[in-house]
Every structure is written in C-alpha cells, then in structure tokens.
Image (cartoon, rainbow, N blue to C red; front, side, top):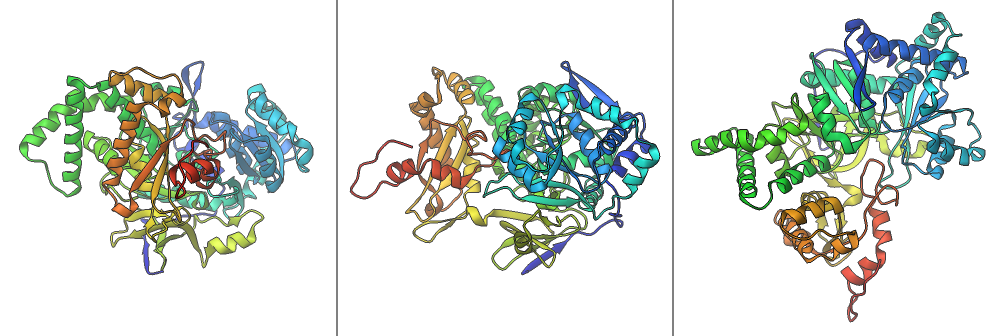
Length: 609
C-alpha cells in the first residue's frame, strides 16, 4: 500500500456475541420505548422493545420446532416490513443463516440463490412470490416448506414455538458466537453474476458498535428516528436494522416509495438515508413548483445564495453581510418550504451508492440539511466511512469509522481492512482469495485518502473508460451531473476504445411533463414522444454542456442520444439496488451505439436499437 490510514477507537469492541444480544439489550435498556414502527391501514403502528423481543423469541422457538438447525439457510423474499426484521433476528438468534432475496428477482434468479445457499425454508411475502418459488421447486434439492407472510406465516411459526422451552431456546442462542455465519447476502450484480457474501455475527457487531462510537448523534442518543424504505435485501438497510437495536434508533419501516413524502412528515425522522437520486428529485421538484415567473426567479437566486453560503462555510468563512442577510431571508421564504418535506425533526441525511453532484450537496448544505456522503460494500457489512455533521467535506466520502483501515494501492485502488470484512464468497474460494489478500479487501474502486483520513472516490476500475486516444475517463461524475436535470432519469457514459466520449440518456416521463408544464409547454404522452421533443432535447443538451464544464475536452461528452425506453431491474438494465448494468446496457443498445453514435466512416447514421 502506498498510503494507509486507520481510525482510532474510543474503547475496545466485544465481537464474540450473537446479534440477538442487541435485541435483548435494547429491551433491557428501554423496555417500553418504541423500537419498530410500521404502516397498518394507513397509520403508524408500533412495537415496544419488550414486545418486539417477545416476538423474536417466539419466532425463534417456532423455527426450532420446525427443525431449523444451526447453520441451516432460511431465505426471505419480501419487501421491507416488520415481519422481515422479526424473522431475520429470529433466524440468526438460533445460529441459522438468513438469505435475503430481492422481491424483484425472477424465478431463475431465486432458483440460483436458493441452490447456491442450500436453502431449506423460505418466507415469501405473498402468493406471487410463492408461485415464483414453486415454479422452480423441482430444481432446488434442499428446499422444504414455503410460508407466505401475508397469509399468516409469523402466526403459524409462533404457534409451533409453543412446544419449545425457554431453556431450549437459550441453549441454541448461546451456541451461536461471533465467528459463526449470520447471513449470506447476494450482491446485486452490476458487474456480473451475483456472488454470495458470507457475513458473520462479528462482522455486523463490530461495525454497529463502531458506528455508535463514530456517530452517536445519528444513532446513540435519545429520540433518534430513521425511516427505512431501502430493501432489507440490501446490506446497508440490513446494517441499519441491526444498528437500531444496538443503539437508540426508532426504526420506521416502509416499502411504498409513492408515499415517502407523507411518511417523512408523519413519522418525522431525525436521520434520512437515501441514494443521491432521491435528493436530486427533491431539488428538481422544488424547482418545478417554483415555475418560471417571479417565484422561479426567486428560487434561482435562493439556490445561488445557498451554494455560495455552503462554499464559504467549507472554507471556514462567512458570506459578506449582504449575502448573510439574503440567506436569512431565503431561509424563511424558500428553504423552510423545502426542509418541511423531510418532516419537522430532520437533522441530517446520509447518502451513498452512487456519485453525488457537488452542486446538489452545496445546495442542501446551504439550506440547513447536510448531505453526508458515505461508502461501503456488501463485503464490509455496511458503511465503513462517512462524513460527520461537524466535519463534512463536500466532494469526499468522509473518514473511516472507528477501528477501520483504508489503504491505497499502487494502482490507486481503494483497499479496506477491519473486523467487518466478510469471511469470503460462498462456494467461491478462488474469488475470495483474489479479492481478500492479507486481510485487505480489494474494492475495485479508485481513489485517494488525505492526511486527515478523508477519502476521495475517483471512479471504478471496471467502469474506467479508456478512449481510442488513450484518455482515461471516470464516468461517474459526468453521469451524476447530467442526472441533476429535472427531465433525466438515467445517464450512462460510454466511449471505451472509441474515438470520443458519448452518453445514453433516459427520461422520467412524469418529471419531464411537470417540467414541460412549468415551462409553459404541452406535456407528452409517451417516452417515445418525449425522446423526440425539441424542448426536452434542448434541456438535456444544457445538462450535458454543464457536465462538460467540470472535465477536460478529451473527457467531455461529444454526442448523446435520448432513448425512448427506461433502464429498469425488470428489463435487466438496473440492479435491484438501482445501479446501472453497464455491460448489459451497451449490449442492448449495441446497434444504436455502432451505427448512430459512432457512425462508421463513409456511412450514414441509422436509427435503431
């Protein structure tokens, strides 16, 4: 390693525990306090810490009665919901292994995961998920019962639990230790076939206890609340689930993204977690609501002031007096309206999973809602670095959590070491040996770390574009900038071994129509019409030109095509965690790329996909 940095710990961390211990200790510390909230008939219902502990224990007893042994794999195929969390903690409590499966997975994907993990029992959310599983049952040799959550699965398992004694449960619980496997989490597959990451009780325990030390304001002081709408099949959501028991978080569970604004305002979280796209959409929605008249001009001036305020703050300075007066005015007239979207208690936001455009970060920081960027992987059991409210350096992804080491390899690859590193990839010892050497996880990401431990992420090795002229281009920053446009849904930069850099752009039809109406233009009915709309084309061209100002001529996007389609997980072009599948997209649009964007010499361009 040409550079290394290790964050110190305030006190030692005991990792030889069962993750169920966090559920039990939360009930001991705050038995009557709310630990889980969930939507029931449109309103928030809740469990106290003591009530939730009793549910987990009863479910664990039921699993014992069903013959689930230590090391057995039990899968959950469901959206985020309280039953997911209760079953997860019950499975791990008795030394069994939770295998999360994205609810968007196809029957073939489910079959592959259940076979690879040798799953014996499955909890499916509804009949649709059960039917997918049953359609491939004959091809899964280890599969036994399938229980449907919406058909009373938890009630059934609790009934079985009546035949198991407390002593039997405690015996199983005490037999599960820190070095035992807790879960196999399958990566979402943005760069290839999903791999099963083996994570132990110790991996999660260390990272949770490190997080409590590193950022107590988020999760380890009274009256903290998190609205979690990420899928629990994703390791970040899973980490936050477990962290809530280890700390003081009141965990609100929701999976209906269409009600997220109402949920923010009724649940009133203190901590917000979301991918950058969510904050881009909030910004764009605010801009569209302002329109193009006086209110629109006021909003634009308020945006400029917020960014100026943030940039000055980042330099340890203050705006001149006139700027501070304007900032106070905008705080009352503009910023307060946007902050109200996040509820009355919102303290700060944590974001990651994709590059964040710095101008969006400066805007939210300037209005009083810092977006703290973080970084983690499935292989690290969750986030391993994040900015803090008091030391938020925009443009970085923060500092390592307590006890976490970062290294920068000779080729600028980011490497990570610590107790939270997974024990390997399930049934893939060769890949494990290649990815984890001498305790260092090789992430595949490129970056640098400064003397204060702030990590700068510059790109991904596999995404790095090398043009025909030999120019190295990291596409993430350009893509993030283009996606700040109110009409753009996704942007994929291409150009590997090509004469110049180009981009494929998809649109969000609803957002595009709202923007068109705000501009005084007529809405369109389809993505096909939107992709050929001259006003929309002009807006995308503006966004591309703006993105190009941050890079050199050789790295800039020379040509773009607006697609009449969307990238989705259903059509195989997005992962379940909404990352673009670069190779799959380039293959799907190969004809367009080869004959329209990169027109062969002497030939006219042709339309087509």
